[in-house]
Length: 391
Image (tube, rainbow, N blue to C red; front, side):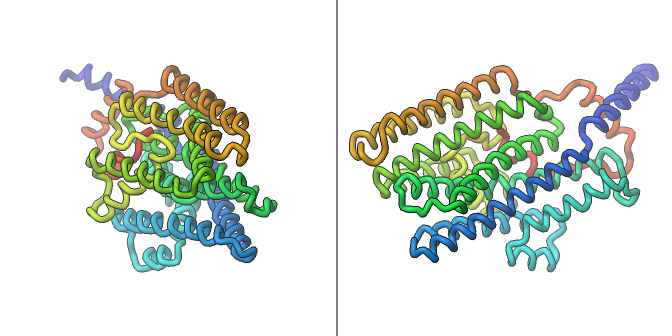
């Protein structure tokens, strides 16, 4: 390579790095959104615990299930959080203790908010203002966002399903805390799904960042309509017969089997990988995710064909066997509308707004030149980050 060509590459690399400094910064807006996310997470857990205690005090067994969802989700997220701290050489005795008392996610929020506050608000020289400092913060945010995603589908989504089932049967007291708990779970799921996608795409250099504005709104609405329609249809099956839980267990087993078939390689231990695949199976019960980051057109099409069939069969079966429980037109109208809007937004997003995985040429050049020039430490992307769920 001649001197002139090297000079051109260096110039392109400098321009690209300046561009990265603008696009990849952990901004004040991002810090505020992280704080809001922590408040939503806390509010969701507190309201669910209060609702569970209220059910128990009123003599309902629903309270035990409500608290069981909270505990199960917390245990799973603590396990993954601690193992990731250990993988990153941060798993000291204090970290173990914090996770044993179920403070793992709160610890991560505290660390991320404290470090990012020094960087974006105080401009601390001890933290630095290099682009790699920002990218490391996004790496921490991505870890946290995936734990939030686990918590949303292990606790908030089942909670919505249970509370909606209670509401449809009229067994609850329809108190204010009941509605607040459902609303908090709903917003927690919405926030977790979108925040996870944005953090992951911001953290991986081979993925283009998810644009603000319309693409984010369309993606959010697509996921919300798809998930809530799924929850409503499954709650109708439970109204039809409580043993429909066996059908959900079958769907979970098939989804988990699919994760095993895909041979996911996310965790550092076999036992943890089994738990990860089981959680992925739960997520797939309610919405589609790309497990391996590969082409998804065929599996997504098959998934949503089954999704439409199951969603429409729920009100039809209810009309045939228990027409007096819930008006047929009411349930069918809600599900049909949810399906049309959700699938329509899916087509709009992936047809017009979806960002592919190609990285611009100048960004590749910047990486190559930077690696030749930089002798000191450079950013190393966490291996698990490359294997996160990628839709």
